[in-house]
Length: 485
Ligand code: ADP
Image 1 (cartoon, rainbow, N blue to C red):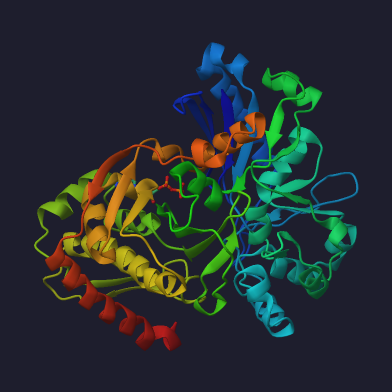
Image 2: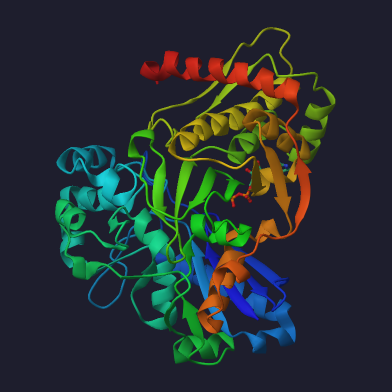
């Protein structure tokens, strides 16, 4: 049995996975985000720990006898956030999260100070990443940086509480934008540019490496043997890929959650920073990945459902599917939360275009599904410019629950969409796979196999042609409005 823990933004998810890679038990505990000022997004590291303990207590109860058979633990988590600890290992201030936009000026400064940063670290600086946040702190809260002795990524704070050690994995290290991704080592150049000592940074490890052992007091509280192996694990993008079996050249998957990632595994490092494609280290040795990171996804559907006063998303989708006759006459730009790939525009906004007195709620809902699909098709174009993509792409995350949406997506991407068994566990399942690798030393191609396919949704040629035309209009609409946001 292997335990995977994923410290997400909205919840902690934990799973126990058995030797046949079936999910034996799962538990979650909610997390809240604090937005004390416009563009700010923070969480208290102590809240992560409390949520982990809550999820573990529930999971232990659900796992029953299997709990005693847990051999190793793997961690996954939201990427890019900055956690600063003092000499005593205490958080100095709330963690600044991936979706915090305060450091846009510092990101721009970093890009002009170090024009090669996108080649070293896989993508130019953007406000989501830890590096520009450090520069922001040096300007706005210098006392915090003076007191800081350790910088950690979110899940690595939980590791510190579990093992007492300071370590991270290669994917999360990349996502801090402080790693030399070709060498898989911290970049002295970037550290110097943001003004921090390399000694502040945790040890970067391959995700399948042992990062430490469970400390006595935590082991006792959790009912596990002291000294249980804690694997390095992975930032959630790579952990989701490990779960989906996207570990070899060209393996692709889309995570359609609140936000969206389009991920392709690569066996060599070829950054394409000009397209705002992220080229980061995968959590496995000798592997990298390219990713389009979209800030909007199924979250846009949740927004539309709320706006239309429909609290049952499933029913709303059924009604929309029943009314479907072809592409919606309404076009939706889904940039409710700004956009990262391909625009790097924190000020971009959502747009509904083409409304008339005859526009129906179903047409608007369909436009939202199509707008998210078209934004993925747009990003796919940039990903394709960096290297070949397969004809089949796995999709997971909340949005993949809708077969109707998956049909729209398959035609918008002009690719066959695959649904996989167990995909709802996502990164927590990937973390458990990395725990197994750390404990057994097995080869990753074997353990990180692709889960069984539960559905294949092929593109409809006529609809694909319609969406290819809509994509042109979608791109032109953004271009026309970009200066007005
Ligand atoms: P997160 O990224 O926060 O973990 P999830 O992967 O859990 O998100 O997905 C949550 C999203 O799933 C919501 O934003 C919602 O719009 C979407 N969703 C909920 N029910 C359905 C459904 N039946 N079909 C498609 N999408 C759904």
